[in-house]
Amino acid sequence: MLKPYAQNLIRDLTASLWPEVNPALIQAQALVESGGDPFAVSPAGAVGLMQLMPATARYMGLAEELLFDPEHNLRTGIAYLRRQFEAFPEIDTIYDRMNCALAAYNGGRGWINAALQAARLQCGEPGPLNAGPKPGPWQRWENIAGCLFNLNSKSGKHPDAPQIIAYVAKIRLTLWRLQAAIKKEQSKCNK
Figure (cartoon, one colour):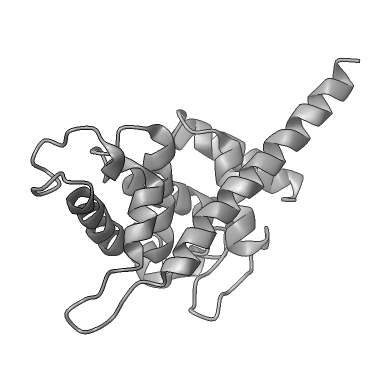
């Protein structure tokens, strides 16, 4: 569980930066990313509550010396996740689109774009992603995620599909647990 200060910060920042999103989703992401530790550093060098890579933080306009500041880290992480979400307008459901955004946050948008294109072809919807998509099964997260396993770059690299898929699933499970705890707390207050 995040400390109350971080919970309040997430609530306030989400309300100002992305009011359409449930703050519990951002809370779940912060818990999965860092366990709620604002000083967490991953083996890959990701930093803070939202585990921002220094290069991503710079790209988003955050100075490296502010990476460990919870407010700046959360603000930048929320803005970056929103940017990923907005990069997938062809996904017609909020659930599938958010899963793609979370996967892109974790594994890189290039891999998710490639998986989306592969899912589109696999489901019989040829053409580039920006060709005016027809709604269909290619837009479902489970089809996109399945296509991650078959991707390779020209240099022979491939995404860590199991890790990316598990990341999205952990956030969804954590969100479900947070929402269940909130409902339980609310029912106590209503008695």
